[in-house]
Length: 445
Ligand SMILES: Cc1ncc(COP(=O)(O)O)c(C=O)c1O
Image (tube, rainbow, N blue to C red; front, side, top):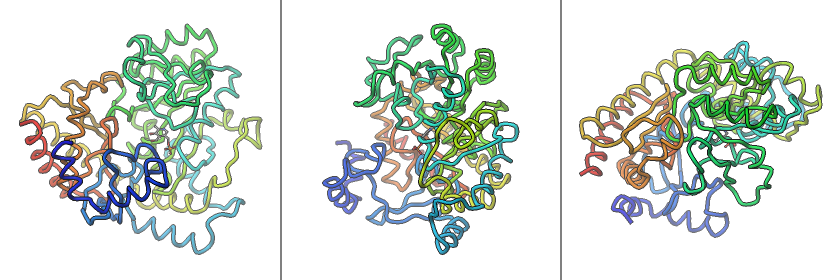
């Protein structure tokens, strides 16, 4: 055990006790495997703004923000008020309210010419799995093309080559294997999900040629958020758009993490590309579980009850989530707010780069507006394989050392990201950079 982990254990006995209790009852003591970080996860007691407190009372500036979901910051008073108000009138009816139409309108305002119609879900994975079903329904084709290392949620067809398999199973760089990333998948998951490298259009074209006109759709994060944050190279998304149009395949932008986050209108606004379908979650729910898929009218008219592609869900468009999402997008996340958050993101990334350069550490920082990441490898990655050159042991040392000084610097693994919320301030960034300097100096000594 490293010194940083020992220090973490010394500071968090109540977290350890909570985990021991939960682990006997719940696999790993967590609700999602990503929350389990050995020796045990931080158990949260409270949160407000840019801060969370663990059960032991330790305070952290939080840049994990529930894997970028908490775009408005924790316990945002405007959102909390909207939730309380709705809770007083009921949380579920199984019958529609006007709130969903209002949130749909706000999202469509942010995605003009891209989202003509939208359907709400409760999570990101439901919208990605439904989007690929819709692509298959619309084209009558079988294959889905995805990017190596991209995570689109825990659904069988997309739990393929997310980076979870051992490196020696990944296959050659120019023809990655479709790896099954969970026990229990049918062979069809890997047979019908083809994997290509991000930022390499020739690779994708070759996959289309191999699949001989049977590609239903391409699902892609326009800026990858597995592997720190990996921006698209100039011209790449345009080329993906042109290829999918040429081949009559549905282009799905998975904007679960970046939608309404890296810009008001997400990646479609930032990069100016129009996909056929967009999947959204995280930011659009204001911290309450909400997802959505939306896009071209002719595709969305295939969704039941208008068309033959089935989509159900007891909790879909539930009033609590709709009220929270509406308050988040219309009252908190204004145009100026995105500009301010992007300024802070750039200040953090520039500050981190300067520290790394001054200390001569073989590391790099990537950033897309309000999201970024530190990888312990000198070259900025253009795809997941390059990102995976990160020294994961050193990254862990960095992460625990930052925790011990009151900062959760990123989600809890090297391939996660840091994110800025509407509640982060210049003082938070200044303090974080001071801590980063001390930590990187110590671990590089
Ligand atoms: C890009 C992307 N798509 C889909 C998902 C799945 O979303 P959820 O965890 O809400 O099911 C995630 C989760 O982090 C994601 O980052």
